[in-house]
Length: 225
Image (cartoon, rainbow, N blue to C red; front, side, top):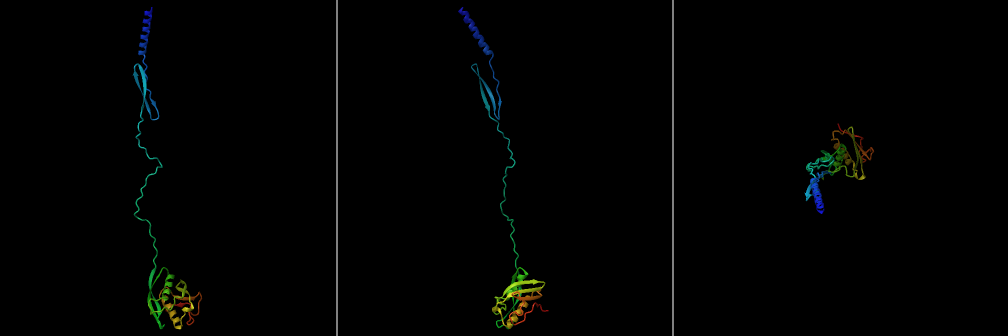
């Protein structure tokens, strides 16, 4: 009886082992697709058991060149400064002219003429420079008849008529001969300008009968024919 039981148990065991070997489980590889990661499964059978080992594949490197985004700044190259574009300002130079000026001698015996160079930027400045030439002399033998104390207050020129307004202190007054020479020197100096047809001399804005009290003063003095 015991022998039959052992034989039946052995048969059951053999059939169970045979059934286990006939139905070995196999696992299909799982592939999981993630964000840039691929997972593979390796199946290894060890002594009747199946072991599944996940294998992670490295993501492929993206070799596509990236284009610059809109709005990105580009490097600009500034050429070296070697040429100046700035234009220098130019100023109008004064015009120069050589004129004839009249003086007297130390004894006030007669008039003497001399050359003088004047510089001016306008017509009024030209007449002012001519008057100033009458007040100074480079030659010690030529004496100005118009003292430096005499102030030229204003100059006006219109339609050939030249008007000079002066202030004369008492220290600048001369005798009868000196006054006559002074007026002649004034007329000959200014009438050398072709545009001047008449000359009116005012004292402190007034038409005076006499410049220094000895000789009558015409208003205006005109160019001789």
